[in-house]
Image 1 (cartoon, rainbow, N blue to C red):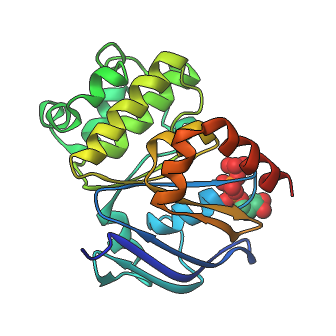
Image 2: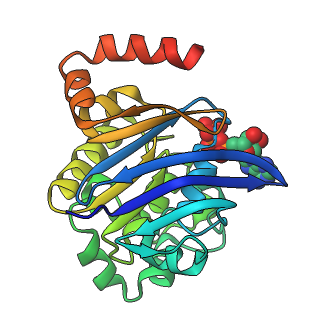
Length: 238
Ligand SMILES: Nc1ncnc2c1ncn2[C@@H]1O[C@H](COP(=O)(O)OP(=O)(O)OP(=O)(O)O)[C@@H](O)[C@H]1O
């Protein structure tokens, strides 16, 4: 099957500095691809470029066989993408944000399906975002990524700020959605999630691919997550 996303030699600049370079990656349809790396290693820059929020400075980007390397708007249309939780507009309610992205709220809720319960969304809908905690804002931001009903979704560190129950429920629900055909790309700091929930991934270091993780490696990691964590931490340190 042709891949959902194919990057070759991808580069991203921020403020005239190259912060991502020579990234090759393949995301299989209906899989969960995890990107890990130290703070400042380029995860957000790479994901924002893939989601059409930043241009690629070099390289090629095919999305479902279509060359969207130079088409930021095309990429933005293809991917559901969560706005940074701390950048959600404080003067809106959660329902306003979801309606702005996905139209009629009932239709958005139908699209979200099991995610609504995992995110505890119902009691948040009428809250002003300015009155929400960091974890509540994160839940709304994640829901926003799915409000448009995209089959390709990019989430940047979705588990930040979530309490352990929400983290567990979100991970299980996302895994179920991937098993039902969703293609998901996430930046992660949580190695246990990478080991137990992702199908493939990579580690960035100084904007470059330091390690690629294929299905076999992650299946081995899932069998012994502690050993995987120790090895990966050693690599991240070096
Ligand atoms: N808005 C920005 N303007 C200029 N440079 C930026 C901006 N955001 C990030 N950078 C720079 O780009 C590089 C990569 O940052 P990026 O946010 O992509 O890393 P990250 O891996 O997502 O980090 P973290 O784990 O801390 O979220 C860093 O050197 C950072 O200083």
